Length: 225
Image 1 (tube, rainbow, N blue to C red):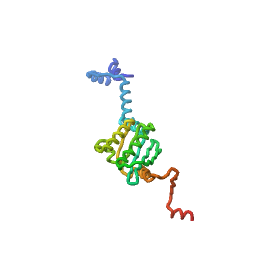
Image 2 (cartoon, helix red, strand yellow):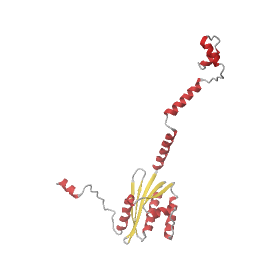
Image 3 (cartoon, rainbow, N blue to C red):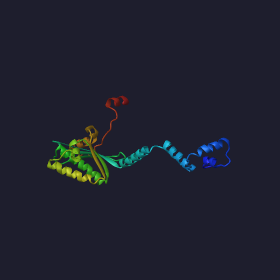
Image 4 (cartoon, rainbow, N blue to C red):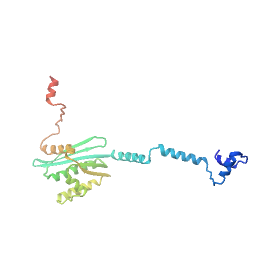
């Protein structure tokens, strides 16, 4: 029965209290809606009360999209070092899965520290471009170079201007490029590779193994005795 009140008011055989109620209610302009409207409203209220909010759903969707972008982003750490002994470059390229590509490069030319810093960055970006990497995030401890690229500092030395131009042209090969200055302690691997680069000048270090010692000598002697 969709309209029980209308059926009561329209029945001709009303008696007693029902008749009195019919007379009283008939003075009002009563509108009748189908029960389906009520059912839909109840369903809408239920969804609003018990479903996750739209903001929560939107935030989750945004995080999923962001994670997919980050999943394709490589991270580059570079550093350059130069002194009277020579010039060395170090770079560490980290894949989205956490794999590392490390390079220690010895330069057969003299360069200032700033020039070496640019050489390291340009070498790292060139390797990334040749690997067809599309998204890259550069962590660098040189505040000067980072601000050259971002814009707050203006490159004035002709060599710095030329290096900056090469760097910017390289960044155009990436769909997403970002660079930020990080503390030196966050760039120790690239720094160590850069130092290795210039101290290895004239030496054949290709066949020198890296030995990992887990415990100091005193603890090793105790275990062996």
